[in-house]
Length: 410
Picture: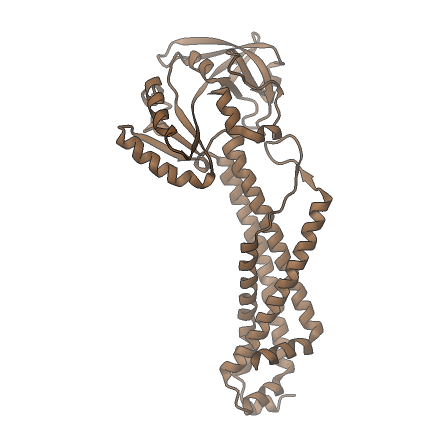
């Protein structure tokens, strides 16, 4: 009976009810569109960190490297024998797609006339191509990628190349100290030029082959081992199992997750979380105020009706339930209409083929919005609950009115 009365009351004030339903619908569509965009952006950010930054899913360091490794690198690096042993253990895990050594180096780079500092990463070219996968297409290299057949080849960041006036095919010299403290020099040939996507690093970064980087430091060691898994969902289980296996084998290690090493991912995710919270708060206020306004006007117009219902035996809780049901119905119908708006806006965006250039990429990518059915159901339920809660306050006021005052209200 309360449901029937609620539906009749909504249709009785159809214009005001429709305005409220439209406000809820637009808010619902906006939330789900932005949530779908954010979800797709997070997925791209994850790929940009795991593949674009070459971090893989897990990175294994010798215990103490992250705190003391800069002061005593030789003490906290994996020897060639340790690399083979650990790699053998890791490859037995079916979730692991690839394990590869890395070595970071730094020093001074010179073109023969001028010089500046550099930071470089020594990597196995074949393994790096597997880790980066299709994301290489978003950050194309001018020239060639690293190859295991070219021992002296190097990729140079565009800012550093411009600073030293280096072009494809030019030679340069790297100067640094070996792990034993002896000065050493290394010739490189510029095989490719790339953009890091960040001004802070685009004038410093080099990429070398792993063996070439070892030559500069005069070592056969690596400072870390990078693991690529078959699925990002396997990250935490593999890390727990790997820690136990390596500890049992006598290796004291530190294992870092990909997002612990990606400052860019954490910063951008934090920004989007804040934006989404801000937008959701605005929609939240709009829905609350729309429902409260609608239900307050309804209470004022139906004061005598409320008095009559109370005189006929309706209890206070029944009055509260009546208005709360009306609010819930407004929220439910608004959300259903919001699904229609979402489908319309989604189709328009897909048909328009909107593109943009994301950070660390040099070619446009399509604006994509993920459809999240589970989130939509949750949002629909929340909107209905929110509308019912917003209707509770005027309903509470209506239920407390004295019957004689309500019947005599003008």
